Length: 357
Image (cartoon, rainbow, N blue to C red; front, side):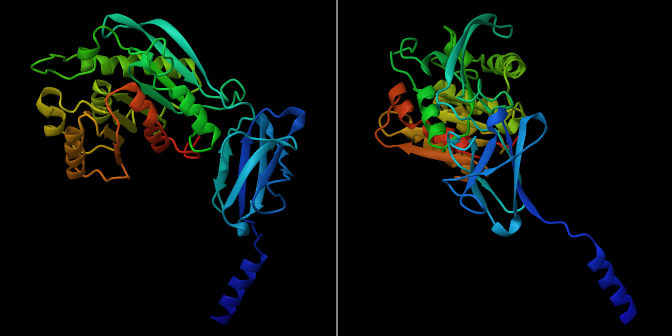
């Protein structure tokens, strides 16, 4: 027995030792400037970085020993130009791919007019916010948030009541301060058929009932176009849908029925009163989607939103896990109030460092 034990120990001693390591891979066309790594640990500091190694496909790598534990770091372009946005955290033993940018934290909005819907037999504009790094870092792909009432999101001149959500300004600010991952936002304009398109059948006063056709437009026409045209991350984990008022109930309805497409859905001031609160009374079984719902305290359907919260909790959703219910003190049913709190669902859906490539 002793002989066998000694043989095993000798064999273990002769095996090559593999050093465990923590690695960051920086995807960026740095050219002759190269990439350096700044960190709170190791041979570098926040003031002076260590050079990353150039690899194939414009990927720069740097490795730490696992013994340093969790690492907080930022890449720099050359010696001095530190990346825009937040720092990145790597657990010991992790390998993390990051796609930084080093320019100004301002995204751009473009408009596609007269985008056709075969499902609804009409057209509308798509208003697309591309994040700051989109033109700078061609290696990067992005999560996508689809939003209704697109003309109200980015520009007061096109907004129905002359007040916008300030979505682009808010996303720019949250990215710059390192609390939101870069995302693409696709604003889908409403039409003269807004009420029927955003509602299930059928309210006694307002009618409605074309939401099933509208959801097919979003899923079968808009999303394939966006995924085929832009550098998106098309999977469900990186796809969200959100709207306000009737657009709020439309978002929840669509995600409840298509959790294979959307993993996140937001109803801002959702109109849960619709059709005698049918969405509350006939809530589908729990699905693997993170839902955000809110209401303001001034004539904003707070009672019905609270009922929806209670119904979702009873169905198995968990507050702050897969349900975020928020009360907007002093908030009311308008774009100004929604602009003031749109950061809440954005940072819950896509917090800095949450996107995996």
